[in-house]
Each structure stands twice: as structure tokens, then as C-alpha cells.
Length: 321
Image (cartoon, rainbow, N blue to C red; front, side, top):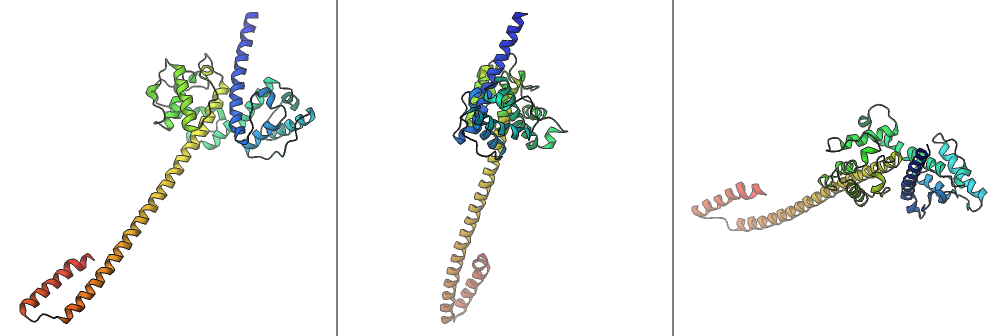
């Protein structure tokens, strides 16, 4: 019994460690652009200021200016305002401001997961086209179905969940390849090289699509990877890959508009050159005919030659103009 309890405690501690790392990295995606950062998840949220800023950034809401958050009552007030906002969006129970201020690991992890689920993962349903997910589904089901649709047909990839299906890195590679084949060559990945696969996929995701690495390969290549951590990372992949796709669409539209403008400018230039040449030709011919009218042909040969020249002018030179 003692051995089993020890094993369970060790596994729970490992899950908490991975979640703490993942959630910290996820939070910093939103805080760093605002000159804020979390280094210790259990301590840095206790004054409520980072928590309030996080909610404002991910929801475009205004929670008001936080107080200094120096003494305990100020910290509780800030955290309380954040929790009240969350409660206005989702059911939240058994978490009080004092729990966050006191740095309760279990409740802090639960709170951040609630925020991720409500403000990131559930947004997936609103962005995925209805025909891609079918009937009404939960956020988890919708995200899983999106992954399955994107990775369908890839060898050695079978996404059934947000845990063991991702441990060898093949599914991460397939997601990236399905979006941008040139970014990641699937022939580089092998099912028997999970750490290498995960390293490559995470690196490409960050360098090519600005998806920060929230997990280490060793966190995923375990018998049962943490579901919540995988979902957090995959939902971030969805957001950034979708953003990249829209950026490419906009770039293509801009490029098409520029090409059309260049083509129009070229045609205008051709038209102006043609008009200038035509006016010069008219002036030359006008001068020629005025001079010719002063020296009319007097012999039959001269008349015949003049008539031939006029016929040539009317049929060829004039018709071309």
C-alpha cells in the first residue's frame, strides 16, 4: 500500500511539474509583450496584477487599474477582481482569492487550466468551420477532430486523444506539414526516434510559426503525457497556424493587388507611348501631303506611282495605325 501511495504521489508531482512549466510558458506568451513575466507560477500571481493583465489581454476586457498589491488586503482585492471576471464567464467554485494569494499549487493550476479552457480552447469551436466539426461538440472534441482531419492519411499518425497519440512527435510533425509542407519534411521523422521528432517539430513550430515551446521533448515522450499540457500546446498551434494562414492569404491579396497595379501602369505607359507615336506620325503625314499637293504628278508614270503609293498607304500603313 505504501509503495502504491508513493507511486501515485510521484506521478501526481510529475504531472504538476509539467503543467506548471506549460502554463507558465503559456502565460508569458501574453504577458511579455506588456513587459510582464511569470517565473514562478505559484508566487508571481499572488499580487493579482499579472492575473488581471492576463485576463485583459486574452479577452480584450477592461478590469480597471490594479492597486499596488503590496499588502495582503491589496493582493486579495486584485485577485478577487480577476476571479469575479472569470466567474462572469464560466462556473468557478472552491477557489478563493486567499488560495491564490497563499500560493496553493493545486488550485492555481486548476485556475489557469480553467482560463486556458475558456479563453483559448473554447475559442477553437468559434473559429473552426461548422462543416469541419459537425454537430455541437465540446471544445476538447472539436480540437481533437481538427487534429484528426489535419493529420488524416499520414503514415504512423493516429490521433485518438491528447496523450499517448503525441508521445512520438509524429502527430506534431503532421500538423505542421499539413499546413506548410515546405516547413517540415515528414521523411525526417521516424516513429522509433521520438525525442528527435519532438525536438524537430517544436523547433520548426517556434521558428516558422512563432509557436513558443511550452514543453520539452522529455515531458512528452513518457508512458502517459499530460493531457492538459498537450491540449494547451496544440490549441496554441491551432491559433498560430491559423494566424499564419490568414497572413499568407492577406499577403497573396496584397501581392495580387500590386501585380494588378503594375500591369495597369504598364498598359498606361504603352498607351501613352502609342499616342505620342501616332501624333508624330499624323504630323509627318500632314507635312508630306501638304508638300505633295504642291508637286502634283504630270506624267502617266508619275500618276501610276503616286496611286500605288497611296494604295500602299491606305491598305498597310494607315490600317496599322
